[in-house]
Image 1 (cartoon, helix red, strand yellow):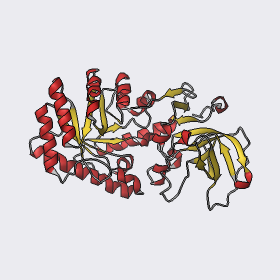
Image 2 (cartoon, helix red, strand yellow):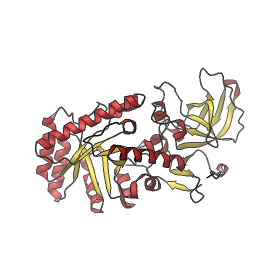
Image 3 (cartoon, one colour):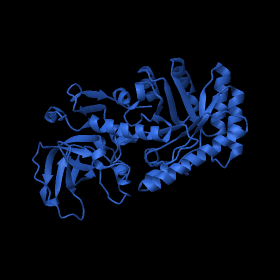
Length: 383
């Protein structure tokens, strides 16, 4: 079906555009991959932070789902999502909100990786008589937090504290964030195997000690797409795969043509002697994320497309101030700066979809479905 053209001139810029055909293709790709690997997909909703996006991403719309803030958990629980994992280490002060969400009818589980956190959760369960489901975070690559799978003493101490306090030890979880720093499916497959080995080793330790460990959860967008074998794993998590971005394209997880998110911007001036085109999208519209700077191809603050989403060769948003973006020809290229008059509209593909989306209140939808083309989908922010 031919895509109905939106009159973007009616939109105030900068603003966020979301191509739902690309979104749906990205979702279908990973859904099929999880099925082929024999695991449950638990999408991370932190990229979209939108009920409308979640309805496309979640199977049947009720979960399972992953979130990064309790504000997200509250939003999606209210929208009918019934199985949510809050995948950030728990702060004790947040436990009352966790209980309130659970009391609303949502099976919200939490994450921890220390004895101190386990003590706080166990104490709260004892005080309230409520059973809070917990996953223990496992360190598979030294990226961030987590208990080493080679530290059974800490793992078992946490499990024992949770059991005594009346919490439910639901399983183990890892996130190989270092996979963002390597290129190609083979390298991502190696990190996926690190995830699998770390979590299955930890699960085996717990089970040998008599603790049930029904959930073995792994995932990041690179490892989810690179994994070849997930024996012993029960679920796969990923988030930015829904929109994709230039960082993911730069490490070979997707192509530029898969990126569903862009920022619409307007030409507001020129510095021809400097080779600059000025636009009204600065880092407040795109974020300060320069995730491609360390990659083989530095995309500046974003890749420039025409108003219909076609990449303009060799043109990047090379610099950004708060509300000004500076478009220029890529360093080393002999391409010519195009003649774009004041008032012309462009689209910028972002380095990091999560960070760019976080700068905006919602999405203007680009769709082949006339019922949704031009619609506005709100998103939330905050914690």
